[in-house]
Length: 320
Image 1 (cartoon, helix red, strand yellow):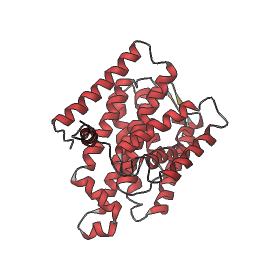
Image 2 (cartoon, helix red, strand yellow):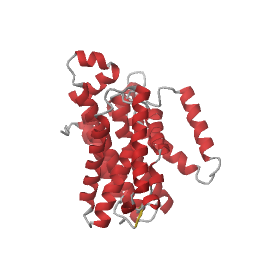
Image 3 (cartoon, helix red, strand yellow):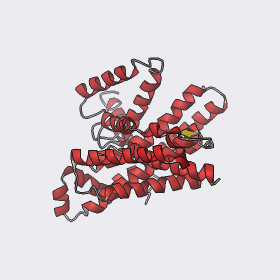
Image 4 (spheres, one colour):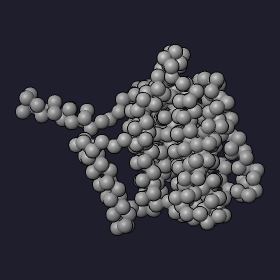
């Protein structure tokens, strides 16, 4: 259940969220944002949803998963089939894609509960490859050529609303007793079980929630680029999302947001260096991991309270 408290701090955050939405909306309407910038803006939002949702599984629950692109593919294909072949409205297609991905999360979560660490990573990697292999061989969804002619229904409003919803739900979940149970499992699963925490339930719940939002990201992707292919959802896509989570900090939602923004920006800036792009990208990641192995934010969050305290410290008696 989403809990929203209307205190002064949250009202400031709400005002900032609304301001960013209308600022980008007006810039788009005025033609200030170019087509290239708009594509990267959309990819930024999709990457934030993917990074935050994977952080719930990997960062907060401690389950190393490498099949997030598989959940994204399920959401993309299911929503595209409903909107293209059955003329269903976008909200229905979006919700169905997300729910299908959540079911896939439960399906992969249940049989792999006894696996940990590297073994779980390999199992989830296998799941992602099964989804991609199936998409390659089903002619109804275009096979290797993929689905084309998907209606372009994703716009800034839908993207921004889904991004805010993902962050809001995940933040509330982490700060609830359920989220603390997930963190306890990450810290010490045996101790968590001893304390009476149903580790099976919470691990499956984390998988289902992470997959649900990955499905939303897939549906948004399919309905913005109106073309999806199995090659879009390879292991490298899952690896890309995992890099955002590790780069931002395992267990930090704001870290995931910052990392998703940074990596999207780097990818866009290196578009013209086709051959060297991945080399430069890898070198940048190595440098960051050498000097900041815990990620940009570690397991901490950027909060308004902390920022205001720092400002207060600067402008306190000494500052005055």
